[in-house]
Image 1: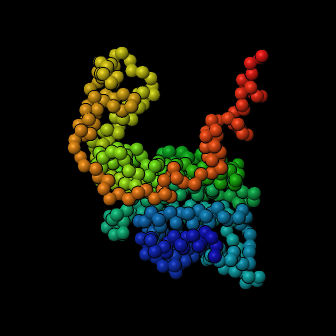
Image 2: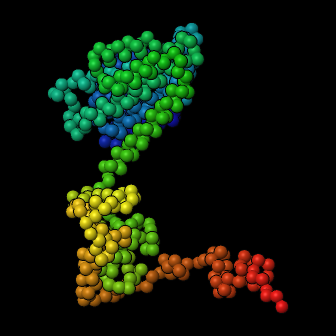
Image 3: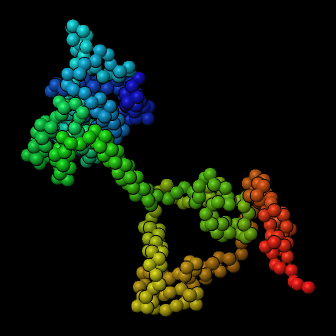
Length: 418
C-alpha cells in the first residue's frame, strides 16, 4: 500500500481514535478525496465537504490526518503537463480514482500537477466556508466539545500550505494556475473572509507564482512545519508549566541522583543520619501530584525566580537596602521582596530548623533493609582508570607510568649539589 494512504487509514481507523471509523470506511474516504482531487466537479467537492464536516472535523486527530493526507497527495504529485497520460496507477494507491481510461489505448489522462494542487485548495476552501455558513441548528451534535476556533485555525493553516504549493513555477510551462489563484485571492479580498495577516501572506505568495521554484516551496513548508512544532511545544510547556509532578525526582533515577530535597524531607520525617535504602523509588510522592500548583506555591516560585534574576543583574543598590541582618541577608525596603542570602537561609528559617531538630523524635528507620550492593555506587565494580587512580593514591602519587617522577629525576626537583 502507498505509505501516505496507509498512514491515513491507520490514523483514521485507530482503536484509540474517537472517530469510530473502520478501515473500510477510511479507504472509502480516501477514494473520495482522490476522486475530488482528480476530477473536482462541484458534486465531488460537495460530497467531500459533507463527509469531512460530518465525520472528521470535530476531532483533532481526524483533522490532522486528512490535512496531512491531502498535503501529501499535493506534494507527491509529479510535475507534469495537463495532457500527461499513464496506463496504470502506483501500486496500492487511488491515483486514478474517478478517471476514465481512453477507449483506444486504455490510457488515463491526468490533471496537471498544478491543477491537482489547486483542487486540493478548492476543497479545503469550500470546507472552511461551508462550516462557517452552518446555522447553530445545522451543526452536528459531535461539535459540542469541539472548539470552532481550533478547527478554523487548522483549516486556514492548511490553506496557507496548499496555497504556497499552488503558487509555484513548474518545469512544465502549461503547468500553472496563476489566474485561478488570483480569482480566489479576489474572493478573499471582496468578502473580507480571512485574517488580514494571512491575506497579506497569500498575496505575497501569489505575486511570486511565476518565479518560485518547486524546491523553494518545499523548503518554505518545512520551515513552516518547524515553526509550528516550536509553537506547539511552547504551548504544551505553558499548559503544563504549573502541573506538579507525582514524585520529587525521576522514577528511573537511583537514590543518589534524586534531588537533595528528598534528603531534607527524610531527615525531618525519619531522623538523622539518613539511610539510602529508605529513599522511595523516584523520590517522595508530592501531595496533589498531577494537579495545578496553588496560588501560594506559584507566588513563592515567581518570587524566587525574580530574586535570582535580580542577583544576576548585579548587587542591590543602596536605595533598595534597608538593613543587613546577622546572617548577611539584605533586608529590602520593598516588603514584597524576600530576605535570604545566597545559601537560602533567613533568620526565621534558621529558627524553624532549630525548632524542628530539637523536637524529640524516635528514629524512623526501624525495619529498613540494608542497601542492596548493586545500588551502592561505592561498591559497584570500578573500571581500570579508577583502579589505577586508587593505586596512585596509595603510592602517594609517585612512581609508575603517569604518576609523579621521583625527586631529583627528570622533571622533578634538582638534587642538591655536593
